[in-house]
Image (cartoon, rainbow, N blue to C red):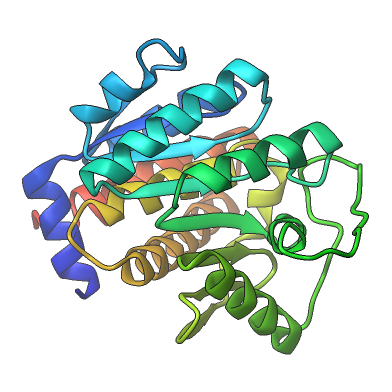
Length: 268
């Protein structure tokens, strides 16, 4: 499916996404989905996670601020989505931050098959290390990647990760890459101010989940979400540069641009 077909499908279906997401960015995730023509349900308790997933069209598993109950809920929701054939998007926030995160993510990935993993370079490397007997050490500095690969090494990492997990990997950074193990796409552009707000990656993962509900392949959905997100951030940055304003206005403009470029794009 091309971009216009994906956007048309979203406007017709108004997909509902079950977002087991980072509490730091719940508001942003809910609002970006609404701005783009979808909606969010945010059931976090393991007693209702699978049930809520049943009446949604897609499931977003964001493991930021994890605890054992949250991971159990993610597993239950992810397994139910797999059973129903619904897309599952995994955002393994800060995967290398602690042995607890690595252990719980490994447990999740042993039971849930994601359609797309949206992550940074270090998070992708951590997930690849789960398939290696060699112990690998990663940064403990937070959720930002400590790795800065060139295009060639980035492509190798994306291809390897996609093949290991038999899904699409969308690795973001200064240059983004989407790979399903056989085809790859590099995405350049965007606005550096995305790195100065909380939730840029979480919102992008939500858009991947939304676009997956259009009927597009996981690769098409991730590539389209990535390209539109870059256009959104570029336009927000341009308006700030022209009219003045700070990082708070840039953040708010991301919602406006999402509505303009996704929700209203095919209504003109």
